[in-house]
Amino acid sequence: MQTKKAGTLTVATDQPVYEPWFVDNKPQNGKGFEGAVAYAVAEKLGYTKDQVTWVRASFDSVISPAPKDFDFDINEFSITEDRAKVVDFSTGYYDVTQAVVTTADSAIAGATSLADLKGAVLGAQLGTTSLGAINDVVQPSEKPAVFNTNDDAVKALQNGQIAGVVVDLPTAFYMAGAQLDNGLVLGQLPAAEGADVEQFGLLLEKGSAITSCVSDAVDALRADGTLADLATEWLAKAGAPELK
Image (cartoon, rainbow, N blue to C red; front, side, top):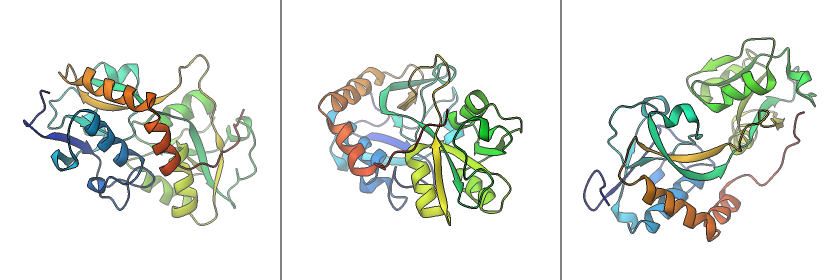
């Protein structure tokens, strides 16, 4: 393949990265769902673990038409039409559900419907589909709070500056269980009306010569059950009620 460096597959992700996607902020250890997926894709493409090199790139910086110094980036990038105008995506490796995280003493702790969230200040990371879900699905009367990182959103929730955080479901369970005192996964948000299932995809440079190869690898991992097995191993199995 026409990789950035001959004989090497260069894979990017953010700095830092968190469970359940990676473990100990060390993508090279192959632990965590996305760490394991990256190495499974590499193997399908014919690369050994020793032939994979990791680089770090921030979430916002790679969603641009600028040239890339990596072959693909794995960092919970939801595939959207707008993003696909400036970057390539592989086929989806994970079907995404957005969820609301709060604390047991929050004003919205007893919420069971979208209507119960209308007057709440919810937060999400800048540039994410989680922020889009607040605006398009919850449609709150209060303007959502926007943060540079999910860690900043967690701090704001702990300090009582916001009532809840919207993130993907596995990250929601991690936040509730590991980052928050009395953390609570309030529930899942339904998809926006008429919207397709949201999926995470590997991000590549627009027009990359290897996009189709990477997609073929992802498709093969879905077909042979590898993606499902890795999801069972690394991602939260618990469910959460849907907020309607």
